[in-house]
Image: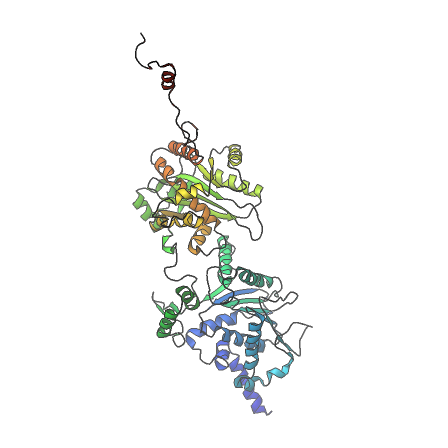
Amino acid sequence: MSYVQDWARSRTQEFILRDFYTFAKSTICPDIQEDPYREVCDWLESRIPSRKVWKQKFGIMLMPRLTYKTTLISALCLYAFLRDDQIRIVLGRANTQLSQATLYGIKIACQHPSIVAAFGNIAGRFAKWTDEFITLAERANGEREPTVDTTGLNSTKTGAHPDFVILDDLVNEQNFESPPQMEAARRLVQAFYPIIERWGSLLVVGTRWGDNDLYGWLMENDDKLEELKRGRQWERLIKGAYIDDGDGGRKLFAPYVLSEEHLTLLKERTEPKMFAAWYLNEARAEGEDIFSPSYITYVDGNYVGGPFCEFNLDTSTPGGKIIANKLGSDKIPLAVCMLIDPAPTVGKYSDFTGIVIVGFDPLANYWVLHAAEYKLMPSDRLAEIVFLAGKYRPKLIALESADLSAPMLEEKLKNHDISSRVVSFDPRLDRKKITSDPRLSPRGRTKKAAQIEALEPVLRAGRVFMSRGRVSPLVRQLLKYPYLDHDDVLDAFSMCRAYEEKMIVAVETDPLKVYQAMEEEEYRLEGLNPRTGKPLDEPKPKRWGQNFGRLYNRPTHGTLL
């Protein structure tokens, strides 16, 4: 090869490898355009690991169907190899056959005229060129892993130490409704945490399928880390068919691929939920939400416990001032109850213990002061309940029947000078009471779903105020309902409807009456007369005088002669 040819090839290489957008458009993605794919390609390029920077990277990219997502992933693998021929890539899809199909696409891309002109015969540089993997002939440092390997939900890569893991479309139409398959997808992602290199990168790519898909699970766990002030682990790039235009409106993401006319046609042919997932990257279709995000009202302030419980609104915030003006005061008297949905086990797949603390004001509003989910051993769980009861001083603690005894808990609280009344929430009897209103249960439903959905009118009416920063698990479960793996916090919150009326009536007058109302409610929940302590269905005894008169045939009133 002449000097001129060498120079020309060198300049071509520099141009093609200038950045990933240029490489993709010059090779196997010629149809992509600067807007919006420059942003997408720059983000993907930032996911490529560097041995010089010992920091692991985790990324989630969600894009609509028909937007060159998988083609870009093939181009990214080839681009990463040409930038660093010692890189070790694992390419995963829902099964190994699909992964091998993507690898075949990478092999075909190696023969693209632009790549051949710049880099020559790339295939000749590989010692192994199989359906499952390709391995470079000249590997440094004795590395044994393939240059590009494949995997799926039906295989494992234990023992490998890749630099770059790309998991593309692990969720598809064949597995998104299968809980075992979704669990397998979660395990596959987690299996790479300990084996990617310290400078490695893990990239998950796909399209939404529903609330409980892999992508929703990853982002939900990431949100939990943020709630704990530990920062998100996963960087996100999420695009739908429509994106923000910067002026408060929206525009098409890629109008030359998904035009307005084509989207209209797809919407007519596709179920609303699937259209929202595949093309809008939203887990819910419009109108599908039972609990709308607009129902959530946050408040800032501080709670003061004790005999006279109240919530002091922070009126320095616009929302606090509006609520204070609406209620007529910035000091809201409350009757507080703690609601507990205990979990008897703490296994990996067991339920959580949900604890919600709610205050009722005289205007029938709910003030959610605390909401959390726990996986604790019985002794630790009891200690947490005692701690929260000491902090919030609830008048009533409602405990759903499980492995925790109401009398035992009440005795434990008395040992800590906490005088809260503890009652057992009976899922059968109390749930029937909550759902007895035909407006809430038009079909006579008395199951847990009806109990939870009975909260919707209260939330829609704007009667629920959430203490900012203390209720994230409840808000998350409300917005994802009914597509939940665990609804323990939401279930605990829904129990409050059984105690709403008495506590609201009592708090209107005197906190002492709150205690009396709760005591009466406890008797009624147990089927007893609050005044006599006897069963409510017990027939009333006849008066002694009536019996005496019948027995001796004598008058029971008047003067004896």
